[in-house]
Amino acid sequence: MPKGIFTQGVIVLTNRSISIDEVAAALSGFELRGVREGSDEWALGGTSLQISYDESVNGIVTLDAIDHPWPDHMGDPKDEAILFGAWAMGNFGPFAYPGGLSRASQQSWNWEGGRNIADQHTGFIRLRVTYVLGASEDAVVMPEGCNPVAELEFCMKLVQSLLEIPGTLCYYNPSGEVLRDQDTFRESLNFAWANKLLPLDLWSNVRLFNVDETWSMMDTVGNWQLDLPDCEACFFSEAYEFNDVDNFLRNVTLYLIEKGEVIEDGDTMDGPGDISWQAELQENSLCEPPRIVLRWMPLDDREVPDEILNADESDESDDEEE
Image 1 (spheres, rainbow, N blue to C red):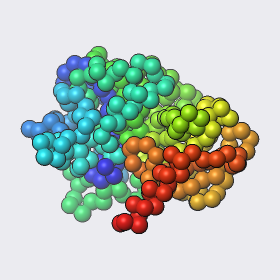
Image 2 (cartoon, helix red, strand yellow):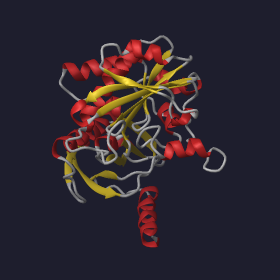
Image 3 (spheres, rainbow, N blue to C red):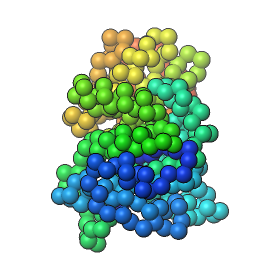
């Protein structure tokens, strides 16, 4: 779901019941604003800690420990109305989409253990950034100067402490479909801090798909946390190194963070293979979750597969029907 009451949401998966007191002890180095009583419905929130993030705009990170597996199906509107409603209201974080944990497990390239983690967890600690809890009725959901990069960086500090709690399995970003255990999480975070970089690989995943026997598609998922479109790259598999395409997608994201949404249909950038790649703004992505993407194609004069061309035609047909 889009940003609403909660502007960011990340998760720590657990394999035992963890009390809110244990969470509080792990976060003793942060400023505690208060404790909020929980709902009788776990999906709507348990007893939660309110950690101060930015007092000038009532910025808070609210954390609760849920003794229930992550609801990857996000609920059926008829048979699980409360769960579905909680998801629709953003209680599992903005941009969480059904099947995200399953996809994150399948595409866990930076941590092999993530391929099986979904079957091992029994609960989760939920972190959500908000500016409206305890505020006046006319409080702005996203106040002026709200910075998604700063929000995520602060959440990473909290996660780093939470992963010290016995019984925590890993970090999970449902918006970016990323899984990392404590070691790979710290490795990524320390590398980013030491080199004054953003830990994009903790916020958004780069995934790989086969389009057909000869073409591949790689994409980012999670840029919407940064209020930016995701990127897709479609290419002839044998002509380009996957790592080069991965780096290209990350570099495009960094360029967008620095410059804003300045890339338009038909714009080109130097990319893998030492040739230009051209961007097309697409309303619908090739793979779930559905989202707006910048689709990049190398200008190498190869014939584009029907699977990609037909997807574009399908999108245009849908727009005409609407």
